[in-house]
Image (cartoon, rainbow, N blue to C red; front, side, top):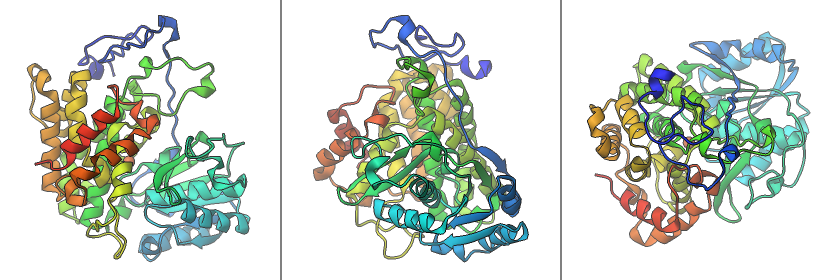
Length: 457
Ligand SMILES: [Fe+2]
């Protein structure tokens, strides 16, 4: 860890661990003892490897699950590995019912339907088999079935009431089938609130799955565009966690329980982020362009796991804050390989389109970290290139985007200059994320970043 961090120069905030050199000064005007001096590492218990999904029944039994709610979506339900998973439950004598109506990009309405299924079924455990949307749906269904309440009760303020979850939830085994969101290890569930057209979510340690059961062979049948979208979500999780405002620049909480999940970059999340970037740089293009390249798809699954743990503890920042605005305003885009007739910008695409303009801007706050990230992705750069770190990172990112057929900027998903003020205003509402950026963020800055994201090359 020391060797990795020796690259980072800059000003260490007063209370930082002495070997964790932040790359920006913390100009909060706080006395030294008021800065955060500790960080936490929270994650689900993880089992990772080829064929791991066949262990599902035994893991469910070990957690004491006798009657499980199994959440999935209509596509995954018909795939051989899903049937293998339910056979494993039968072999272990775990009773279960399947809810296969999880929708891609869930909404408050789809979450509520899933919660009603969970409440009516009197389950003592939960299993999700699918992408991030399925896993998020399962988290929320378990929450509202266990602690029934009007939907906005636990939703983040200011859109929701932001009330704390009253207690623990039954066990949840999350089995991701895409290499992207990292939802299997995080304490976040995201959805569209249809009545106000805004994207927000629920953040609570209580909704983190008990176990992540990650079988990389589940990604073998994914279309190239889904692998690309999910893969760029992974890269952005890693880049945003690595460049987030350091944990030691935050005000110390009054009690450990108040330490936020998005703590800012820290030594643990840095390790996962850098390895995820190295794997992404090496394998993303192969995983997208050759479905038979199982080595590449497996490596990407591990990168997704590492980046998920990283951002689950560090938090993401501007590309994700901006993505919610893009997804909210671009309604007519249909990505090949996604469900027919449903127009939306896939999450990973809406994120990565904002990444080049963001990192060009944030590089000045932490040049060595940006340069380290660029090198991890495969850029050829020397220490003396630190003044051009933003450009070097942006170039290697756009190179990967071109090679994998990602749309060329937010104009290519249907947005125009006239949308810039609305995009900036919506992104500014994601304060939990914008506060995690390594630079101060204003509506004007967001508008400029969106403007620079219209066309990327
Ligand atoms: Fe994401």
